[in-house]
Amino acid sequence: MVLFHLERVAPLPVDQAWLRLTDWPRHADVAPLTRITVRTPPPTAAGTVFVARSGIGPLAFDDPMEVVAWQPPRRCRLVKRGGFVTGWAEIEVHPHGVGHSRVVWREDLSVRLLPRLFDRPLGWVARRTFGRAVRNLLEYDSHHGEPRG
Image 1 (spheres, helix red, strand yellow):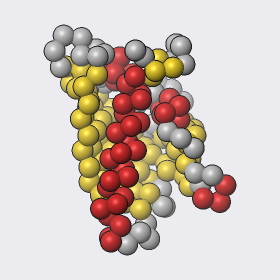
Image 2: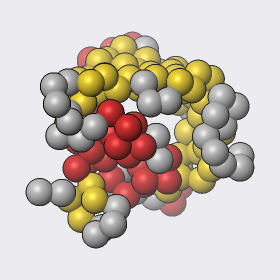
Image 3: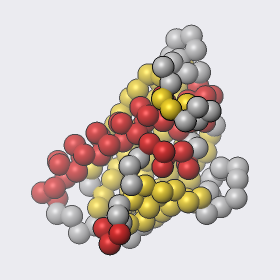
Image 4: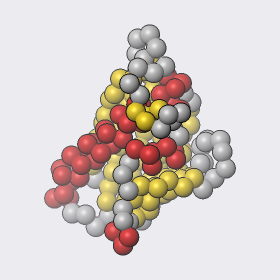
């Protein structure tokens, strides 16, 4: 089990940062080798289920998640319901000065059959991977298909 915490400041108002972070299919745009399928009809709410499929060929796996708390535009909690990856994630968005927001991402991540010996490397990889994804989600301009700035 790996518990990690990320914080990022974005030059976006809270509502825009929230929309970027909780647009589930958009996560596939910033996470390499990942596809997202939302299995429940919109809009997102408690009970929404989506699946992140990551990897290539026989090395791919599904990471099904369910939204268990939905308090837009401030807080969302997800529970990972897979047989391979389990745990939870929590996303919070707070005002930070004028027109900016502070994003807090907490995640408890477990990979079944992975010995505890690998917790430290898994934590390092998870912080790096999710940190990059959060940064890219906050920077990615969906209207132009490229990073802002």
